[in-house]
Image 1 (cartoon, rainbow, N blue to C red):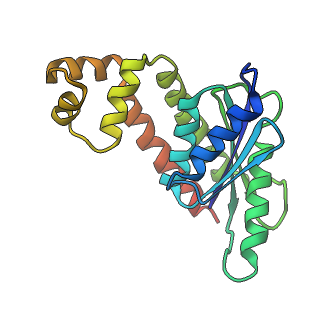
Image 2 (tube, helix red, strand yellow):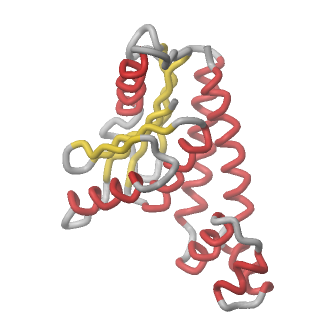
Length: 207
């Protein structure tokens, strides 16, 4: 289980409404187990499994203007009465991973001990946390340079369409779609995504 804490760093006049709309969209997404708005600018999400956690983070990075924190607990037993305590603990870890100094588009990561709240796991877990943050830094950079056409093209492939199908959907040639995907850094996104999911899976296995 993972928690993602998102803190809005943008300049929208109606910040509360903007954040509320983002939270509502996440709540309707299959990748989020639970979503809660905290105050005016913050969102707390719980996701089960590496791909769902990665999906939440990717969605928030695409929205932009959010600083993110990812929290995980080592050796968490979620059976029986431990589930509520585990959820609270992982959400607290995610909040600690997103301090006020965290910049928009960046992802802080904390893998904490389940038995000692607020204490980072040392050794291998610390290395995994750094690798997760690095993978999402790559993804954030790629996404930040993407044009509207690039976002539309990559969204079609992310939805499961082939390049030929995406080209037909967009009303362009397959060659033009290939060019848009190249300019959008689609292959770099795929590499960063694969790395992030592998590292999240390792974090989920830390004991």
